[in-house]
Length: 290
Image (tube, rainbow, N blue to C red; front, side, top):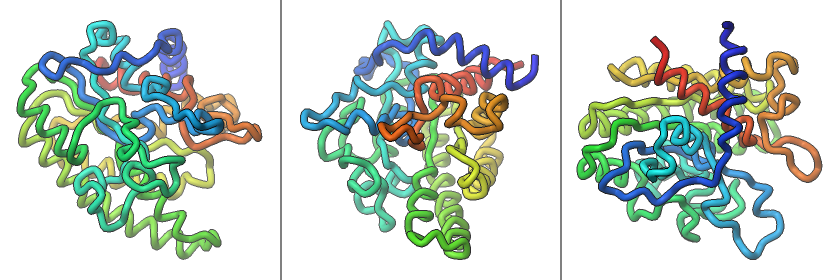
């Protein structure tokens, strides 16, 4: 079976399990810790169109919840999703003190709200996401799977700093952001590995359209290097997964239905339920391939 067929088949199976998230796992018994940004969170900006009231965290389902279903962790509440929409590699470590801010976790810049201040996370915790992860890895020895997807918002902010779309500005900003992500990923992975020796999956970034391919490629080179420099870290290639799943649509994830459709019928950059299923399929293939 070809890679594209494998992703489509497994994603179609996973999409049948688009159940409400089973959050709130007991901190003493959960076995899967999901870390990251809006993709892992399951962000859907269309849920904020008619507010108030604000949507609830359980209204959002990310790929970790689908992985939890397949791994038989959902019903027993053994998966905890600590992801924060808008989180950057810097805010993951430094929180609100991150000098480059973020895209919605602490500061409502590109996100509709600041998720931390409004208590919209799937899992409530104080401190930074890295601090929460380390505290759980120290106290919960049942954890045997950690997934991490971070860095995409660094690139989003880098591109947004060039409002005129100047290619030279964008290229310079993306290259600088990639250097920041590289340093931050080293800090993050070093810290996790100091406290945890189990399965650790690092996911790279998919591209929402061909305009972003170059910037995402620069980011993914950085992410791949970070994974390679940390023995035992498995790299999940979200970029290739989206390309494989949208090959019949000219490689366009919007046309393939992998992205959330906005009211004006254009596509948002966040994964739709089928898109989340493709990401979960990529994680499953990484977990179980020979």
